[in-house]
Length: 265
Image (cartoon, rainbow, N blue to C red; front, side, top):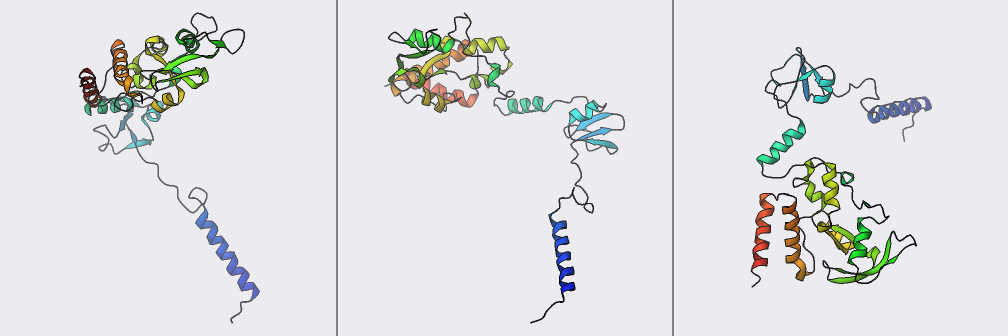
């Protein structure tokens, strides 16, 4: 067997470890490796005009300063090219061209719900629990703010419940669904009105409400078949009340549902 001298073995080990360090180091950590070039998405021309890749002058602009976004370019003292549209404007136009809905980002906090407008400590949910119970309700505490028990019928499941914790207050037309069908442009006041409109609220089995989520008629119907046509009519009535619009693919399916409900035989 061939033996290495200790000094040679130590030198060899040092070289191997040094190579390993170079291999593991990131480009920015190692001084001998150049950093990757920034991807050019916006060019500011010598005349100070900012062009993104939607601009007809983007490829023709040869003398420029690079920026990662239009905002950064404009904030540097540049100006957007004539005809520039924001990414939201472009996405909205694409949605129109493709006959689908486009909305700004949904934020549930923009829709104040379960409010206590009369300041009696009972919010929308608990006032509805009181008004819809078929027997006298019991409260959690003596201040009578929060309902604990009563007796309620859930049309989604066709079952009765006595514990309020088993029920959710459902928006027949979900807030997020409304947001995606025209309500995104509403004022906060109108969103609050919609979120607390008793016409659009039902006490239902909590698990079914969460199963439904923000789905429309073409994606979810109550498991209680006897209630489905009433649910479809209720959903459509709220859409009409607030002048919300289905997209064409939804409307085709929903029109068929309405026709079946109108001619059950």
